[in-house]
Amino acid sequence: MTAPVFLDVDGTSIAVRRAAGAAPGIVWLGGYKSDMLGTKAEKLAEWASGQGRAFLRHDYSGHGESGGAFADGTVSKWLSQSLAVFRHFTQGRQILVGSSMGAWIALRMIQELRQELHKEGQNRIAGLVLLAPAPDFTAELVEPALTKAQKRDLAKKGFSAEPSDYSAEPYIYTRALIEDGRNNLTMNGPIDTHCPVHILQGLADADVPPSHALKLVGLLPADDVTLSLIPDGDHRLSRPQDLDMLVRAVDAMVRQAG
Image 1 (cartoon, rainbow, N blue to C red):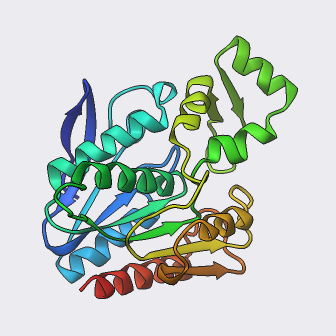
Image 2 (tube, one colour):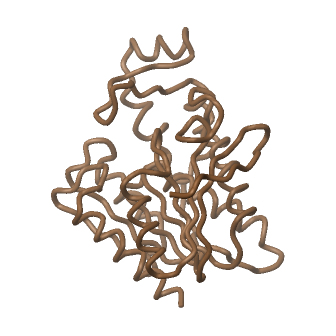
């Protein structure tokens, strides 16, 4: 495996791995506390290499090989880093593939890029593939479930910790993350992506309930959206059959983009 390159974004060293190839390229956006060497990203990298297709991925600050402290991260900060990587390393049309929080970052990227490119009438995003999408998760999923003790920790300590099913380290939610999340909400009205969207959602997802994906679908243009429900799929969607479905979804999006 080649070593990552690093991009300085507002004083933080962001680790990036990229492979040149045909357009539309694929841009991977990982989840909360995930890194770019995870199972799904590696599977897509292998597929893209076999197809001769451009592939780009990075670690948010405080994640994986990037610099910065995880506890200092917010959606705005990770969005800014993702946009900087996108602008610096991509040309032409791209398909964003967002997992969990990465789906939130993808939706916010589209909003920012469309404002930026509106005068030129360009659209750099050819499609979206979203896995177990968790847009607005701080306001929609975390805040409503906070206990009195967790609220007290947020107020006094500035963070709350809870056990993780995926790591020995606890999940940390900071007051800054939650407050900043309110400034990045995407599910408070219709979402105009101006590109096709394919959502993969496990019905056995204990972290982001299927109802969240259904709510998202209801905010998207119906004629451009495909929702694939996986009866026994969990939040990670990393089993061989899940990975095969991911590759098929991305491949179909590439073909649709022409």
